Picture 1 (cartoon, rainbow, N blue to C red):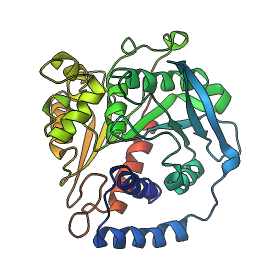
Picture 2 (spheres, rainbow, N blue to C red):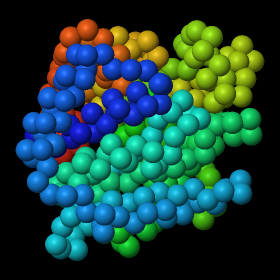
Picture 3 (cartoon, helix red, strand yellow):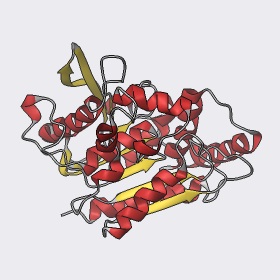
Picture 4 (cartoon, rainbow, N blue to C red):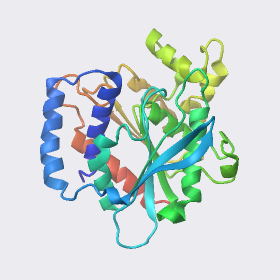
Length: 323
C-alpha cells in the first residue's frame, strides 16, 4: 500500500524546484528515510521506458502544438486499463509535462506495474496573450483526445481520473467540476465527453475571489487578466468553489495546514460545501506541512506513508465503483 509514496515525495521536490525554497533538516531526514525504505526495497523493477509514447500532439492552437506523454500499464494482456491524467503545477505560468518526470519515474513504474496507465499533459501557460479559460480548455481537450484514442492505447474510456498539484490541482478541479458544454476548445473534439471518474487535488486553489497578498493577487491577475474589482464574474467562474453540482465526481483534497501560498481554508471550504451538497468528498489536512507537503517543524501528520495509503485506496475504490 506504499505504491504512491513516490508521488508525494515527487510533489515535495517539485514544489521546492518551482518555488525556489529549501527543505529543512526534518524534511530531508524524512524523505531520506522513505527513499531508502521504499525506493530501494520495494522498487524491484526498473523504469520501462519502452512502454512510453512521448510527445503526442493532442491539439494545435495559437500556433503551438500541445502534447502529452503516455506511460503504458505493464501488462501482458490487451485488456483496457484505467488511466490517471496528471496536470503539473507552476502558478499557471511555469512548468511542462516533462519537468517533473525525473522525480516521477519510480512512481510511474509502480503505477504501471499495478495496471494503471499514467498520462502527463501540457497546457497553455498564462502570459500577456493567454488567460483563463484557455488552460482549462486544454486540460479538457486532453481528456477528450484521450477518450477518442483510448483503443489505440488500451485505455478504458470509462475509467479516467485526473489529479494535479497547486495550480494543476485547480485546473484538475475545474476540468472535473464543469460539464461537457463548457470550455469547448478543439472543434474536432467538442462532441466527446470530458468526464472523469474522480479528482485529486493536492493543495490547489478553490476560490480565487479570496486570494490575498500582493504577490498572490499578481499571480491570479496573470491568470485572469485583471483584478477582482474589474473582473469579479470571471474570478467566480474560475473558482472551483462555484462549480459544485449534483454531477460532481468524487473528490480527494490533500492540504498542508501550514500552507502560506494556498491556505488550507481553500480546500476546507470546498470540502464543507461539497459535503452539504451530498458530494462524495474526502479531505486530508496535513499537520506541520506547508505548500508541497514540506514539513515546517517535525514530521508531518498524517505521514507520507499514510497519505500514500489514502491516495491509492481512493483511486482503486473510485475506479472499481464506476459504472
